[in-house]
Image (cartoon, rainbow over all chains, first blue to last red; front, side, top):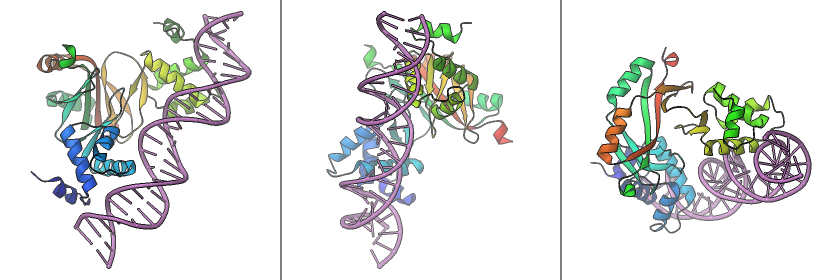
Length: 134
Length: 134
DNA sequence: CTCTGTGCAAAGCGTTTGCAAACGA
DNA sequence: TCGTTTGCAAACGCTTTGCACAGAG
């Protein structure tokens, strides 16, 4: 398990306190949008600029260290890149849950049937989560 | 098969020429983004305003007559609402292809395993399409 | 020491809003 | 005729850019 410091350096990105904080917040919260991230990081860096957030989110996304998840009917959220998975998005509480995806079989079929070489999948399942349906 | 004129009226929306043109363009092109739609519709309505496009796209989307598809790494496209399907998005030519989705079994499993009531699914599969891989 | 990153302010761009005139039903 | 829609211009909000200074390596 590498530290974010080491990971950043592997990507030739300087390990600034701001970047480390962003990575920590994103990874502990799981999924976070720009505003939430800004509010959270301001607790540590009182004078951080939104521009800094944007610049870093962009460079880290381009380097595939972070992933943008475009949600229907709400703002994009970001997560640290991990193995392929789908998202369960609750329309009531807004919570987003990762879901292991076991669709390799289906994707293989698609590759064959449509002669389509799959590089990536975005799967968002919207509905009502366990606690909200009580 | 209802005409768009009739469909609009069913939703209590006036069947203006602009709206009919939008529906025709969206349905014949399959998937279209705002700019493409604007360029296309200007051929018929030289003085149409972008604001009109936005207002109509929004009201028709809210009425579930149109659907917004948020694509990774590019602008949203719109389509006329039809039965559930997934999208194959080519990273080279940008073409978007509909794909019948046979994942009801999987979705049932999700409902059970995660106690999640599914209302909607967004599935975008990115990669390289048949003609671009030649 | 050098080059990258930060913070600020301004610019940019896509989208929305307000309003008067035009139009559909 | 009445309420909705259009087109225009202005406003808005989110994101990006330019630049001087600070900081990482």
